[in-house]
Length: 346
Image 1 (cartoon, helix red, strand yellow):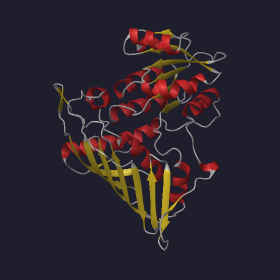
Image 2: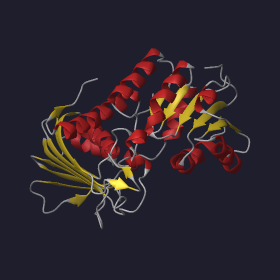
Image 3: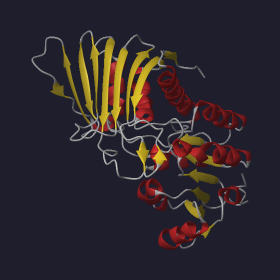
Image 4: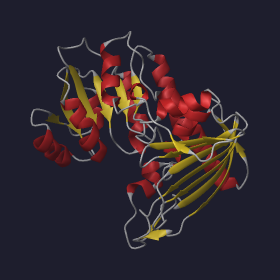
């Protein structure tokens, strides 16, 4: 990493939808950062992106050329998972801070390689993009569970259904292409990240999967359309986690946590929480105190840590990513073996 300029200089690798819709507006609002280079899948698309969004940035032919630019402080990765490990590791070796889109990697092995590269350069800030699901009520959920509001949790039920893959005639989305997405399937990794933040680590899984539309335009789809996971948490709770991309008229994503003294329910679409304890007449909506309501400050948190070595390091970091990729790997191994699989420890 070069000595910092008056502005932090960012190079973007993969300027897709989430970069355009979420990251770019937030970064553009910061006077102390400047996006100076962009590398997309093709040079032509890099040119188009710069012309439309960043006329002062330089389109770059490929990601390796971008990472090698001497003036860069930060590499911002917005590609699908198949590029996360090579770009992150190369950027760290070039002494760049790294912000990487989720999911962290193709599999657990790549996640371990990324974390090892980050640990070799602890002065560099590394961050993974968190899911927006559950951010608003994150602090109050942690507090309610930590304070024992529902007692000891014993049953966790999560349902994430959507109709996105119902059309059998539609071409395979990149998320359905294993060569691009790896072992990541549907919203599994997203909610494993959230669940482990609130309830602690998952220690073992038993999983089953099914592909309803296995062929799309002569392409063999290997990423499942449906996954059911029986999860064993280290705190003793059992989990039933259901995921589907072929569910018509599905309810909103939601989580239920049952304890020996009560129940918590989180509706992820409405970001609303209901809770009830044994003896109550009914569950009630939990009001979020303004001081405990979290908002999307991802870009701000990352840039603050880069600017100030004494600032808190942002989460999720690469260790957090390894924790959810270990569960993703265990789910894939359980599907393949049709057996219970213990989650690998870091």
